[in-house]
Image (cartoon, rainbow, N blue to C red):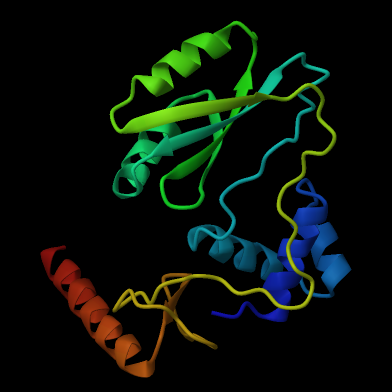
Length: 203
């Protein structure tokens, strides 16, 4: 679904400065502080904003960055990637072409690399691993958001299908719920009202 101008502006402000206050964002984009607060909470609930992080300089902390290319069978790539994601040393994981997994690793001690390589190669369905040790960090920034139009992959709250274009919105208990069409909205609201009525009877 397409994000509106206010949501897009909030995301761009946070992209530029993750520590920006609600008041600073509101002043910059020309809306009220409560508007920024409610919109940001909604973006968090939808999983579009997953958190707020500090960017550390690995070179100044004497950390070693390593890129691993893990080769596996295409049908087992998802399972292997999930096992890799459970490891603390795996900082970022990307599924590449079928059967290839890209893993960013951060090491406090260079000698830990041999232990990690032994662990990865011993995993079921892993056919091979290539490692590339970073000698110096030249750039480490989060992905850039496009400036023209932002689209969010948010499924319909009723049918779980994709929402194409402008979503149908309903505000329930202080939170927006999104639907692909008015039929899904009606079905969802009917179930919601039945659940609320049953809960009132129990109390």
